[in-house]
Length: 115
Image (cartoon, rainbow, N blue to C red; front, side):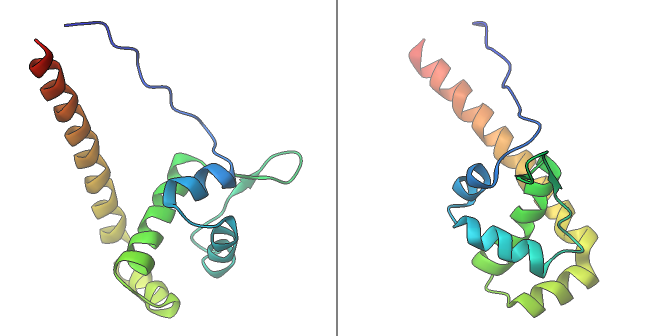
């Protein structure tokens, strides 16, 4: 099997990078930070810029799913997370794992097709 570099994982992402990941405006991320301040507790660098760690992106993924994909209102999202927080984050972790597995399988398929 050919040598494959390990994927580099960043410790922190800028607000612009996170906005690109979710295909949203940075203003929406700032708004969600205010609305869900108990959930999103972001760190900031020395200049006051937001720094998003993987755990923050996972939280945003849950918010994005509930609000943008499922159509929850902001109040509905807050209520749902208050009642089902653990379940929501377990689902996100499972979804993320399955996505990685799918990517690895697609890479294996591509490799086998090239042989």
